[in-house]
Length: 293
Ligand SMILES: *[C@@H]1O[C@H](CO)[C@@H](O)[C@H](O)[C@H]1NC(C)=O
Image 1 (cartoon, rainbow, N blue to C red):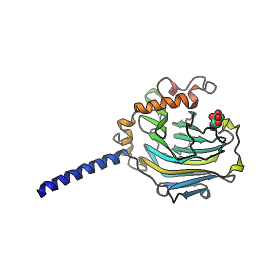
Image 2: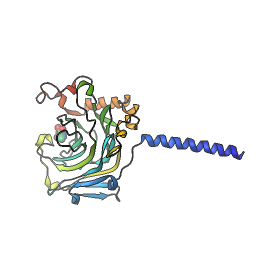
Image 3: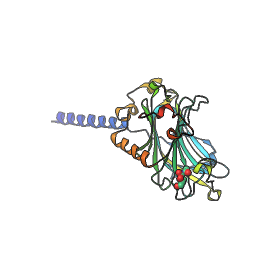
Image 4: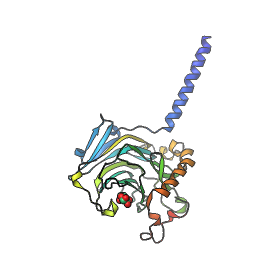
């Protein structure tokens, strides 16, 4: 009898343990600001708030500010919750991006949040630099007020594609089309960066709307940092391991639900796509050809 009980308990234990392992293998690792990031610009303007659970970035006439991850990562998924500058934020830019920090053949994946006059929509600009070449801007107007609450912004980067998400909605997909001669960021690890700065020469309505310094200081808030990827320096075998969860079948292409949301964004909220900008690109760049982005 006791042996039976023991065996049953063992089975339950193994079962729970396996479930736990499974759940761990698909959920990203929480990161903390203190352990995983460092202030890289104006530490007078970066401070912990909400009892250390969130970070506040400040922009005033003396300075903007920024922080960066201590490690670089080669493939993986990075996300954070951000609450953007409220009210009249025209001329301010809050950025969240990954960057290889290499001068000439830079790889970079950008989210840039372009402020606006009170009541006007925030714009999210994304860009992809591969092997030193960028100029791949797309812009989407957000369908909610991103300064009213925290929302999650995510970059998924694997061998198959790079996807930018706003909450659960994919707003951009950049596929790995190396087979067609199109550059893809694939061998340089990238750090995770964020900055809050002034760019009123271009950000809002192409620079027509200037920053209103009488509304300064401007604040943006960050929390719930998650990074899961192959940290570098680290074992090279990690990045090429196709068993990493972010390389898994569920992340190789958009799910039908995600594809539907992505179409909805492109049809209803996209305000600029370099692929359709004839004045900049009389011949559209090769990655813009039908069906590959
Ligand atoms: C700001 O609001 C204007 C007017 O609604 C809109 O055209 C523009 O896309 C918005 N965003 C930026 C960054 O200018």
